Image (cartoon, rainbow, N blue to C red; front, side):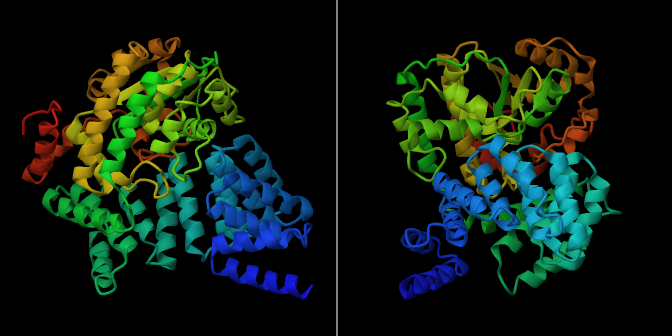
Amino acid sequence: MTDATDLYAQLTRAFNQRAWTLAKDLAARLLPLAPRHSGIHYIAGIASMELKDMPAATEFLRRATLLEPTRADFAVQFAKALTLARRNRDAKIAADRTLALASADPATLDTLGVVYTQVGDFASAAAAFRQAATLAPQHAPFRFNLATSLVASGDVNAAEVELEACLAIDPRHWLAHLTLAQLRQQTPEHNHVDRLESRLQQVGDHPDSEALMCLNMALAKEYEDLADYSRSFDHLVRGKAAGATRLDYSSARDEELFAAITETFRTSPAAFPCTSDEPIFIIGMPRSGTTLVERIISSHPDVYSAGELLNFGMSVKQISHSRTSAMIDVDTIHRLRHADLSPLGELYLESTRPATGHKPRFIDKLPHNFLYAGFIADALPNARIICLRRDPMDTCLSNFRQLFAPKSPFFDYSFDLFDTARYYVLFDRLMAHWERVLPGRILQIDYENLVDSQEENSRRLLEFCGLSWNEACLRFEQNSTPVATASAVQVRAPIYRNSLGRWKKYGKQLNPLHDLLAAAGIPLEPR
């Protein structure tokens, strides 16, 4: 008993110190001695989740909740683990059960809001975030999370109130500064430049990569709105450089991945396909108009927008049996050459439930699904695939201007302008490959053409998807469905031309980008 007591003390210390590998090892030694100790299962589950071993995490946390079904903290972490494992149906059920236990615990409610967001239940997410902020109004992160849910639902004014409240509580909530800058078009009469410059000067004495990244990017956005493009670009470069210090990005590693995808699909065994025609995949480089197309098509009464799902990639990872931590890498792709791909379509479709299945069609708008386009075409032969193309210079600049979700597996290239350009070249060549091996399967549509001829191209999109014409698709800005993407604010307005040719406003500062793309053979407008 003394040994078990000592081991449990060590386990608790490891948990408090976030020593996850040690915690998992200690839990494995303790569980044979105390198999019904819910706390040991809980710590083992959290450690497994932090180590990205999701099958183990969900099983340990499931046992913890069975042993102590009234513990809200156990229940919410089980729901969180299920979302990370992309078991959305189970996660929604677990979240609903947790909600009944968590009515007075703001931290649990806040985590529940994250879970509901991940499973696409934005109404429940907003309610959970609001309840957490009401219970703990002086806790800045709760106010920030509530603001993000308000942005997704299109309530910009209320979001602005919450962001200012967040910053009043904690002026060092750096991401709130950036979100506030991006919330609306800044003007000479209404902007945050002085406050941002003051904060940046204060941070200068105590370097903080997150502060430098967010404050510089916020200033880049506001100076661009004020047409000071030289100063905007300088802050953008400084902000992204600060963010890059936290990454281990390699352009050469992406080149190897794209080469593996190209080669593997040529020799991929034919799968027994899922015959469902529900999915509509919208792919393309991020910030190229994918959200605009999603809003147009999802305005149709027969279409549900499921958001940016990682589910197809997670299904591919599961089929491949790769044990690497990355969702997609060379090992994963190579293993697909010998994997049984026959369950892939049904596995993916089932993983999207219960959010999907209530309407005849649903949209999966994860731009980087272009990496999987060949496998989508094989596994789901009746699915529609639409790829957005945008001016290469505008695409690269727009990617570089954006701070994407920090834990996403796809966006590390975007912290350097030249890495972004090299990634665009890889994307362009991969799309040319898909066109050669999948003729007619992918509709490529130009963002610029869509802006210039909205109805003509909207009709083209619906026809390709096998949908009847509906006038609501021309009034997509009235679509009240939440938007959890970087374009959440823009898509609440009618089509506008302001972003066309944005790169030209930056003048000579973008000459090196133009030269790199041109040298790679990418057709470009003249400078």
